[in-house]
Amino acid sequence: MTISNKKPFIAGNWKMYKTIPEAIEMVRALKESSPEVTGAELVVIPPFTALKDISKVIEGSSVQLGAQNMSWEEKGAFTGEISAPMLKDAGCRFVVIGHSERRQYFGETNETVNKKIKAALAHDLIPIMCLGESLEEREKEKTIEKVGSQINAGLEGMGQEEMSRIIIAYEPIWAIGTGVTATPAQAEEVHAFIRERLAEIHGNKTASCAIILYGGSVKPANTYELLIEKNINGALVGGASLEADSFIQIAKEAIRAYKEKT
Ligand code: PGA
Image 1: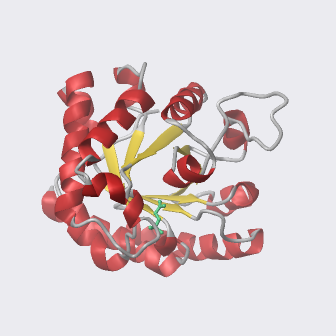
Image 2 (image 1 turned 90 degrees about the horizontal axis):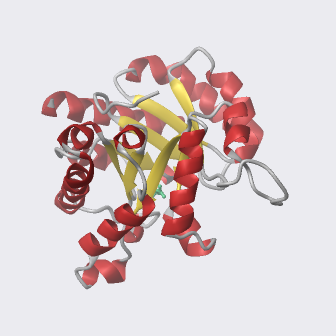
Image 3 (image 1 turned 30 degrees about the vertical axis):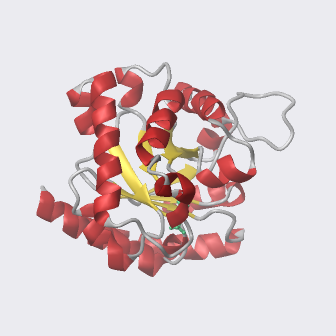
């Protein structure tokens, strides 16, 4: 199961929002509008509790399902953890790994990210690996160094075949949930660097096919200007993905940008 960046990839990370009835209501609305945005890959990433119900709602539509986190263990005495086979069982195709909130509040490191990516791939889930710098790192001009080290450590041991099944999301921490978006030029600089780094390690073909998302205060009004950039293949959306209308609007803007640049 490989992935391609021929269409923009728009994923909505709901974080710790929505009860099961709220989740179902939102996804029903999304499903209804989804025929308008078949030019984009559309993925919802709800809390664990809503996964199974949502997988039933989206059946027969183009909307796909992902989870926000997983354990690197397959099963065992790990209270509170959820494994890759459990996510598959609930209908997931994607899983977010190493979101900055997981790194910041729950002690995740490049090493745990690496283990989780390997476990996701082993179970045929597509990991969306998040990385990005803090405000302090940006101000000290350490952005590229930080992102480079996260790529090296997070993707250690991956070969070309594995890379064809991994999505990368660049999310500057200072832009997440703050309403402050990276400028298209700031985002593109880092995206271009990530693609170059992938080319150095895995060759041009793998790098040119890679899906590299931008995340951090993406909304309908700034999607076009970000996605028109050469190396930005989609968006990982938090707040603006909670309502079907704005999420669909983002997908439409992404399709418009993609049409123009390709
Ligand atoms: P935001 O979140 O769109 O609310 O800034 C993005 C993310 O955390 O993935």
